[in-house]
Length: 321
Image (cartoon, rainbow, N blue to C red; front, side, top):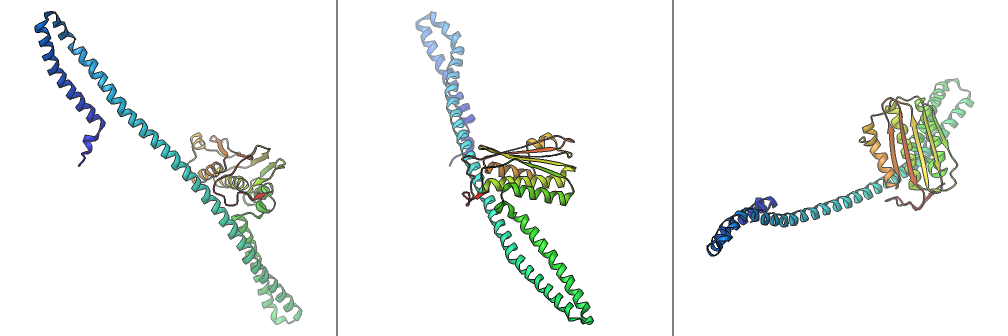
């Protein structure tokens, strides 16, 4: 049975030092006394015995500690490699989860829009027909029923608007059908209408096509940035720019709100900011926050456009215009 205390390197070094010291004290006295009996002049060895002991034990300690620290360094290197591998596996898993979540959102949005939206539209059409038929009948006793039909039709209109809003929130149709620029413009308009905070978006012409993962990452980071402005910034204006060349896409969102402290900007800890940072990293890009209290916040996203294949997207080859 192994005793944990006996396995400690410091215990082993102490025991070795004790054994060597005892052997040196006993052995050196015997040797020096024997030599001194034969050669009286050799008595000088006695005066150097302590120095020799220090030198010998120092060499032994160096050898023992070198071996011990070598093992520690090797173990530390192995732990670092395991941590890097674990971090990479976590990144791959996170990317796949994000990609799957986007696919689920797309599917749910499509089902809500196509199935529920069509059914509500059919109900609205039938209510319209009923309203016109009742109106043409000329029977005044049916006025209450006509009013009820009109009110129900208005409720169906509101339900259709809600369905479209929910479906668009899950996955904006413009992102898949019209491209990133149109989706950003639509999101900026919706933000301004909802919050009454002007969002001025300037988009330079993007001639090259963006892969579906890159377009999704850029749009979601833009969307989350505007959400943070609405919830926390107390801003009165948002300025955003999006530009791209053959090498990269640059998206910048700047507000004039109350900002945040420098430590939070450098080391984001909230779920929203961490989610944005994780999306950017999974897409192979960089996300930076620049802010100070009372001077607003700037979010800067850089995504590579060449040889970029974000992890975990099952449809990474699909293109968004």
